[in-house]
Image 1 (cartoon, rainbow, N blue to C red):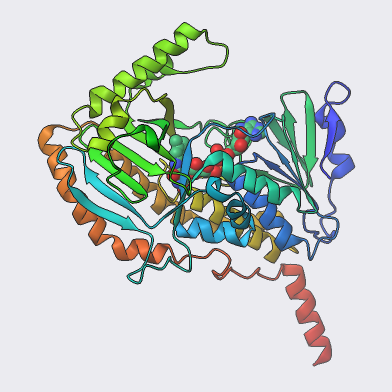
Image 2 (tube, rainbow, N blue to C red; image 1 turned 180 degrees about the horizontal axis):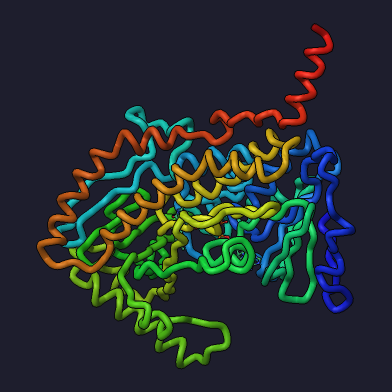
Length: 473
Ligand SMILES: Cc1cc2nc3c(=O)[nH]c(=O)nc-3n(C[C@H](O)[C@H](O)[C@H](O)COP(=O)(O)OP(=O)(O)OC[C@H]3O[C@@H](n4cnc5c(N)ncnc54)[C@H](O)[C@@H]3O)c2cc1C
């Protein structure tokens, strides 16, 4: 298991002097046995489960430790939409069964996200998660679930996985690489040493900014989410959608969706432009006095009303005028062009490539985890750097493309003039139709099935093979 050392007694370089751990150039290559994953989010837990499944047959003493900065699971973050791809991956990891076991809290099935104009109330089109027979893609539709439910389900599966341990209250603040090990430093002064470190610590990743690609901080996109949860029976107007709606206007968009199977709660999320200067005045933080918190809450309600007050959809209008407690989530991005790995450290999920969120974002984090684990198992007799290269070759183009798509989508939520807003509405229905096939094809994607490159035999092996062949001729 990754060892922890009290930093007051040793410095990292004392613990891991190259002379103690240096590798003989001809030493056989062993797959990593002690793996440290940083961050117990979607990518981190999925990576632990997927590595455990792929590598356990080859590494009997495999030990995977996930280090999470929070002391307990975070309850913030509202609800998340899972696409058919994300659901398929979660099913393969055993997480979907756990979600289903939670009953209504396990999320609401989403057949389609219906789009409406806030100006006219008119339906614009829909993003359907079912085929023309009403069946999900590869058996899976969409699902809107509270983040906390998803985290609990993932953690439950991790807890019963023999070689996975999750340690809370461990905030990474730095790291160092040595010949055959790498180490991370925690804020509490301890360190963990492992054969492989996987940075899954999200958009503001310390593994990225302090270790792998110093100087690549996340950038604010200029857009933010304002999120709230509302009891459905507190609204007198009937919902204009079946499970999920995206209501667009020239001032941004407002998502309204049930997030539990009994449709008792509506999750609302407005995507709006916010200047970076405005962000600090709207930040709710622990320890703030009641008056400050109340002032921020009232100001956020005002922001929602200013932007969407003229909405023509009664149910959305009621949400806008309600006393809902809106929370501000600034949206950051990490351009995917930077470095993803060193020799023993790799970044996955948002830590490597946070894109402005879209319904597919979590699926990309899950794809990363599953693909990387498969590559790691397939390259188990090769140096880690070769596994990293193979993974990057498999992933870079897809991520670059997805990032560009997300940016394009998000630009449509910036403040617009009247005419531009009308063009946006008109273009949206055209865009939905013209992308239908590409979207449906993407939802068939299965990271457990795509072909992996095969490791090239090393030069030593090639020469040994030719030596043996020559001897037998
Ligand atoms: C407001 C919002 C709405 C979104 N909605 C959707 C949606 O509907 N559908 C969708 O697919 N995607 C959505 N996304 C995107 C999606 O949430 C992310 O793509 C996904 O969570 C990425 O997973 P991750 O594990 O890489 O990062 P995260 O989920 O951010 O997990 C990172 C983990 O690392 C921990 N951590 C951070 N720093 C440290 C440290 N220094 N040391 C130790 N641990 C650390 C964090 O506490 C966290 O647990 C949304 C994103 C936002 C911001």
